[in-house]
Length: 395
Image (cartoon, rainbow, N blue to C red; front, side, top):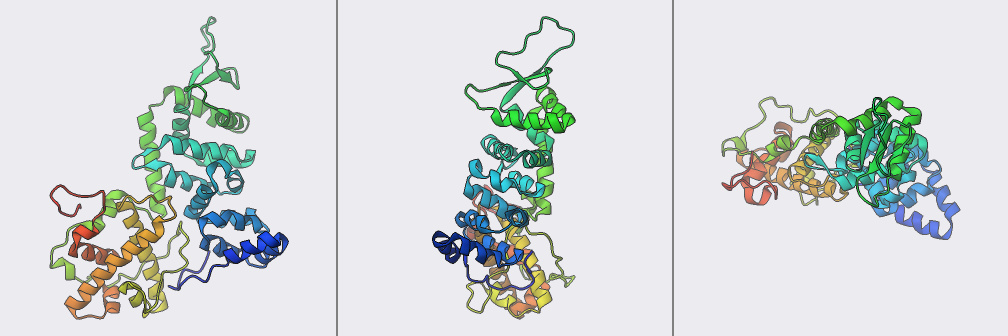
């Protein structure tokens, strides 16, 4: 992955130049991409607008090596830009982690999966080659697969002790035991047939578990368990629960708004895996946010820690504000809001305590600076969907 230790501006994009060259001489454009290292190809793709990424990946000499390197969220953005109905070639080379993250990020709304999005993603997985489709299905939570099947088909198991039993009208079977029927007239269940056939041939016990689940399991319990697994994975990617994220907006008394960190180690943040492509934060003395101007003067190790601390805060902003984390525009919006209110808190403490802004960053965690800034102007800072009836900030 790219070195994220320095807060530097991204290099100029080359995507437009390469794609213009490709329209005139595709071989020359492919050679230009091939001359880059995999890391440089990754940067080229991720720095480009999502609408151009597929064309750039197609110019790569080994897309099967490049695609798995895409950070999980960037893979999701790219697949959505291509269109899930046309994304089989991307899913062909996707890692299980990328596939799972796509559904975690895009197929849910608050505490429940969105049926249409769940259908679209699993149908897209099924449209990939056999190995990729089987790999993707196995990577998903079984509760989620059962929910997908429940909303599309009914399932009956042939009884052993009823000689007069007849299969349901229109029922399909792969094994002569389980019969499934589309719940909705005209619904094309070809993707379901393909998934079940792959499981039946390669993973019978999962096949058996899925169809038994449709018959016997309770949808609400499956939603609850799938939601638990999802929350844990999103936390590993840096997206906390909504309740934890909302601590950014909790009330601080005037005295608390000028407190320094008693431990004195706010820049001891360790590196962690980022699901989005952020090679560096905007920096420079001309930045509109005082935070970024301040970070320029820190030592390299301090800037490295500040980078991860800031991204963590921006992720909390995205979650607390109900931003759609599968939307490519969410990252810049969350970064801008986080920088705005951290800067506001930074300026406040520096003025009240007579410290330089660099000293404040060294002595107050960025999350706390955001809280301070938000408390100074709660009406402007509060999330649009988290308004307490009393008018106070929501804890």
